[in-house]
Length: 114
Length: 109
Image 1 (cartoon, each protein chain N blue to C red):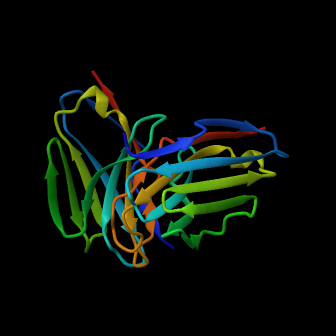
Image 2: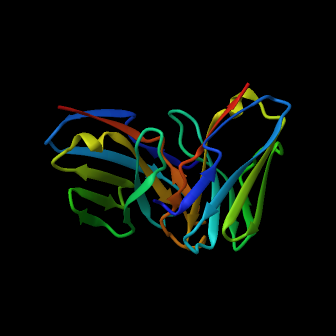
């Protein structure tokens, strides 16, 4: 039990659909992250939130829209995705954003865009 | 640009020792992490090095040389459950984690 949960675990959506990924951490951490993981590629950092404020957006297309209503919850809203967006989307949290604290990952959402 | 290099895949025998190397070129350095990721699961933390030298934790050890931009993860007494991908990640001067693509380790009986 890593203390970070994600739903759904699997998602198949068409290019015109709108869906949301949810992440919840039960660790009392102040920083939360969204990553994209594609086969044989490094983890790609998408968004970082620290104390519910977005501190980083690594040139992610606007079809991905994050939301952090409080320090325990993180959402990734998806709309008009492309087939190349199919990947594993991982949520993570850490105690602080500014220091080298280990990150705790959720199990991920396997997204397939048809 | 920033870059992390590690072998794509390695094979080792149960009970043996394996060393997974990681070299990095980053803008600044604030520590190096190793994570383990079993297929279909989340990455989990293994080790963190910020000073030169060897950190030992049970069957796993991690080494760092900052002057060489080099680290390795050493796994002893390999077990079948060690079959997984091992991810190297470096924290740069902005405390952003730069990730390697991971090394898939296959353990054979």
